[in-house]
Image (cartoon, rainbow, N blue to C red; front, side):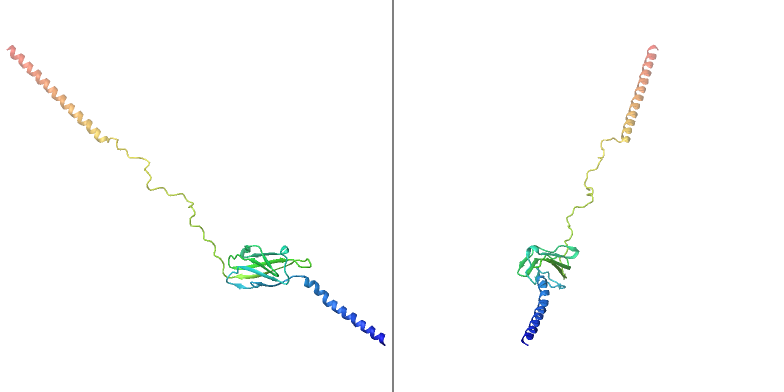
Length: 204
């Protein structure tokens, strides 16, 4: 009787150990994996004021050597302002906001069992920085207009004599010479006539 009770007791003990092992063994590998437990901003949040830093919280402390975190904004523009800092199970990354829109924080960390764990959180920034206006001091592409005060290419000639006054001068000189010649001929004729009359008077 006592031996039978002992065998039953041992059987129940074996079953209890097996059941406990089946519960505990699957939990051991799961506990070895690290995982994200929270973030600031939260996943899916909409924020009007950009945070100075993005914080990720994990189940276990991530190792800096195997941790990589990136932040990208609209049009895949990088928005991480520096290297991440570690404090126990928290990792913080400086945030440099750009345009309003969707921002994605992607992470990749190591686990105790050697398998990397990766994931991402997303949040929307409703107000962003304005784009820089174009420079107003750009040089004009066209050529400069010609100066209104440029000197004329040809100067007026004041020394050329007018043909009309020159012709008038020639006419005046020719008219005066003709009058003198006519006067001299008349004087010679008168002188000849006087001499002839004197001779005839002397003979008579």
